[in-house]
Image 1 (tube, one colour):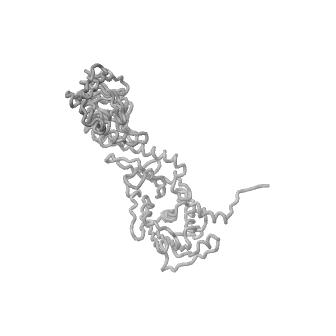
Image 2 (cartoon, rainbow, N blue to C red; image 1 turned 135 degrees about the vertical axis):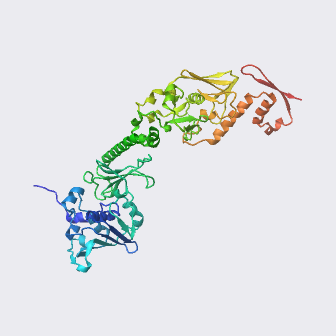
Image 3 (cartoon, rainbow, N blue to C red; image 1 turned 30 degrees about the vertical axis):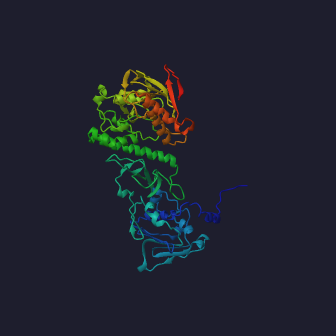
Length: 532
């Protein structure tokens, strides 16, 4: 017994309607056929009310009408087959998407019911009078349901190389090769956005034979790189041809070619522009496309790498971080190498590095993003990594200490004249702002606002909800505690404490007078006596 592959023609014809996943593939297939026929203009007309679609082109026309209904047989010449490898299934979409099909080309035409054609009924090819001969091809389809065609056609033809009119209006085709500044590439032709002004993009639209097969952007807004692939090297997936075969692998190849294209652009720009202009314009593109090594032999640094500490450092999970600001100009190489400017690496403020931030703020150090430079760049030798240096915090002339019984935080509070911070071998004394370190808030004489609680916590819960009310309560509690502990008027201090108790809500105490005595020592008690 022997077996062999066989094809059930009836089953094949019946099931061929299901592979296409997009109804608009009908349009792209008709456009593709017109392009391959050498058309220099294609006109599409669609009447949504009557469901009639008409596509007319001025190409070479149809020599053999049998090819229209021969599945998997393209009918194109040898050059086209070698260049584009057509599948021969394009026109079959018409048979499943329409009820009646009329095709005219040269002096021949056919008019048939598609269900009859799929049943393999013979179809007569009719002759057209010479005066009515059609230049190119005209296809008229009845019963076509494309209600959104007017909204989709512009996007469908974005990169199509042949001018297209839809209901009498020319489509823009803004990503067609003829409308872009392109450069050759081993994979086809490439348009890179931002090559003149540095405003690069990682969003890319990739076209094969005029239709998009890959879009790495999330919408049609913004700028795009555009790639038109060489059809001899790439193939699209049947039947819709909207994705590349081995797309993951091909995507990596495309990205590598775009990266190499940017390398060539940057190398030329580096030779043509002054160093400061080259860095100012192209640094974001260099970093985005992995070419920061081009900075290694330049004295100029990108200002994007430097932040000045301009406010009080706080924990901020919302990433607002208003306490830092980008510098208007990067420090010079001479200033860095001479030590006139210190560049430091710091993690964003958290539970254990507020003291490091406060020292950097007091010394006017610049926070530096060292990862934005190549490992061999000269500036890397001058970065000070504060997170790796030991830190010590000391209260100078301690006055008192207690615990802040806050709503969200309960740190120890030490009031003092100043706070001494030592990081590595560098020391500063701070008298105008609080410092949080080791679950302790150090409060020097110049701090009265209560803001140091924001160094102790971001006031964000486990659900990433910002606890604004708790922040306000704890900030006010600290300010009030500082005020009481620093008070020099004993009556005002006691009055402030009693107000919190709300004594007026206790009827038993109404009209009563008391004599209160407060003891001495590190943990003084008190005594109270009813007077009269």
